[in-house]
Length: 442
Image 1: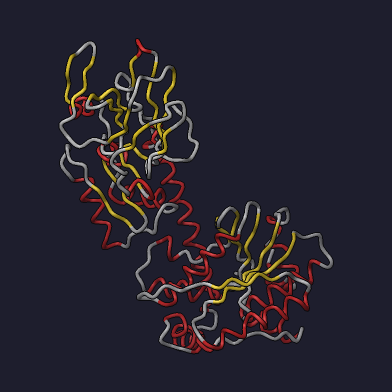
Image 2: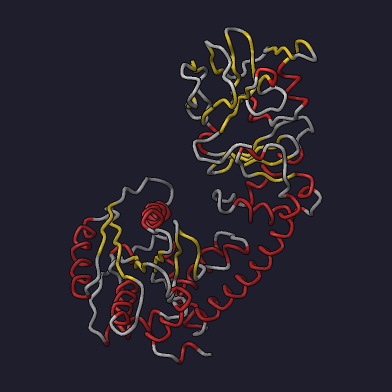
């Protein structure tokens, strides 16, 4: 079916067919042409069709004086259409790219307001897709970047959908004029110091002057590249399935991969698989920073190398790769006295510990490894804790936060390690839940 031959409301409805059972459609409403047309289309369709609940959200960035009047304009548009409006004010963090900082602030709000089975709808169109492809090409993007903006992707607890990617700006303008719509013209859209504005006002007109179908062709190329990226994603899933093996430290609740199956792949397949695995966890490194992966792989066998990324760290330990972020990157508080042995003891930045069976006689304290600890084992006598941890191949990053149970200066137990986690003859064991989430105990 040639969707360009269908009228705009019917095309929009067709593009949203997969999302008709959503709980809520929320329009990202800037007040500009694109989102104004999208909101008007949906409000009009809602009068004739059974659609999810419809509302709008406006982000006030506070970057220019003119923007102070935009929430009022957006409210008047929404009132006329009978659509609830939510206005959110954000603080844009200063940085090298004001465009990126504003986008990060905006999408942080979008993520927080998109609940389960909600859909956030944005008004990007085919011209925007062409600009995105050209912009990313200038930045040396790879296949994933050059595939452009996806029509849909996960966001928050729901999804982000761009239902106008096959619609041109000219079509949106024609619709707005026909329905006598009024929209905001953002003065910053004329500022050509911003890369996208430069492309829109300087480069695109030159391209379309020579090749009238340039934007359609670029959007089509993005679609081809998106299909190719899909094939790479499928290959990554095959490769990751070989590395996503079970191990004896599942109770850590951490994402991890076995290194050997990945190391056996070609360098390109390694990067492809790892990019796919890391993509939902962190901003991916650019080409120049993939040397960190090589350094991690090439480190000595007994080393515990770390690759620091934007939103966490990738550790290599015990023959596996481990993704660490959040509290795992903060050192736990040194010691905690345990007074009420019948209740779990919460450990700052390190989850909680608890007993099963009989509780040992106190007073007891939870400490962390400092070096030189010795433990008495009934069948082996006194043994260095370091050697005991080596025997069990405990990952290096875990060793400094494994809860150690002391009575005075006597090391009674090491949480979660079979044979070291309690005294069977006395009927008790020490369990550690590394985070406050209820992951269960193994």
